[in-house]
Length: 446
Image 1 (spheres, rainbow, N blue to C red):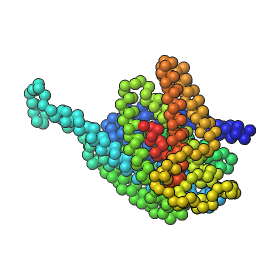
Image 2 (image 1 turned 135 degrees about the horizontal axis):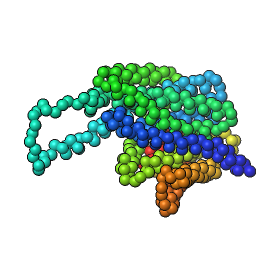
Image 3 (image 1 turned 60 degrees about the horizontal axis):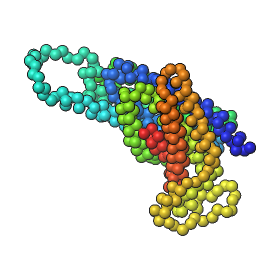
Image 4 (image 1 turned 180 degrees about the vertical axis):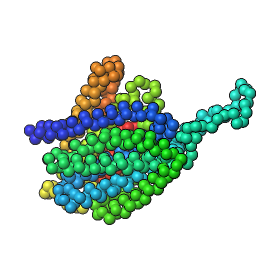
C-alpha cells in the first residue's frame, strides 16, 4: 500500500506539471516558427543562431537553480526565515552573474558562426563565371538604404548581438529565478515536493520567456543600431555583473558556486550544437520535424530532470546511502542508525577499481523512474494522437509506431543515464545539482 500511495503521490504532482511543460515547449516552437520571419531576425540572422545557444546555456542555469532550491527545501534549509532569505537572495545574485557571462559566450558564438556562414557564398560569388557581362559604371550601384544591411558583420552589429543577448538573459533570469524560488517556497508550505512541481516548469517556461524577450528586445534595439546605445548597454551590464559577483561572494550559502560548474555548462553547449545542426538539416527535409523535435527530446529530458532532482535531494538528505570514494567514506554517516554498514572506509583502491566501482548500478526506489517513464510516455502519446486527430500533423500507423518506440527508448535512456550520472558524480565528490543537468540535457537533445 505504501508503494501504491507513493506512485499516486508522484503522478498527482508530476503529471500536471509535465503537461504544462509540454504546452510550454509547444508554444516555444510555434513562437519561434513565427518569429523567424520577423524583420529583426531576417536582417540580423545572428539572432536566429543565438536562440538554440541561449536555450541550452541559459536553460541549464534555471534547471540547476530549481535542483538546488529543491534540495534546500527537502533538507529543511528554507524553513527558517533568515536562511530562506539568504538562500533566495544569494541564488538570485548568482543567477544574474551566470546569465550575464553565459550571454556573452552565446553572443560571441552566434556572431562568429553567423559571420562564417556568409563567407562561403561570398567566395563562390567571387569565382569567375564562364559568361562575361559588360561592366557598368563604378558608381552606378546605389548604397544600401537599410541601416541593418549596411552595418552587417561590423562592430555595431556585434555590439547589438551582445547587448540583446545580455539584456534578454538578465531579464529572463530575474523573472524565471523569482518564479522558481517562489514556487519552491509555496510547494513546501502546501506539503508538495518541489522536485516534482518546480523542475518541469523551470525546464519549459524558461525557454518561452527567453524567446519572447529575445524577439522584443531585438526588434526594439535594432532601431537604434549604429547609435552607440548597444555599447552603452553592454558596458552597463558588465558593470552590473561585477556588482552581483561581489554580492555573491559575500553570501555564505552560494559563494562557492561562483567558480564551480562552468566546465559542464560549456561542455554541454558544445555537445548540444550537434542537435542544432541536426534540427537545421532535417527541418527543411521532413514536414513537422520542427514541431515534433522539441516535444520528443524535451519531455524525456524534463522527466529525467525530475528524477535527478529527487535523487539528489535523497543523497543530500541521506535518505539514500550511495557509495563514495574510500578517502571520503568516513565523512559519510547514514542517519537511519543502521549498524550493518562499515564504520570505516575500505582500504585504498586503484584508480581503475574506483572507476569501475563508481559506475556499478545502485538500486534506489525503482518505482520512481518507472512511474516517471509511464507519465512521460502516456503524455507524449496523447499529444501525438491529438496532432493526428486534429489534422495538425498527418502520419501513417507505421510512422506512429516508430514514433512511439522512439519516445519510449529515449525516455528510458534519459532516466537511466541521469540515474547513473548522478551517482557517478556523487561518488567523485561533485554536486549533482550543479554538474548533472548540463550533460544530461545535451545528450538527450543530441
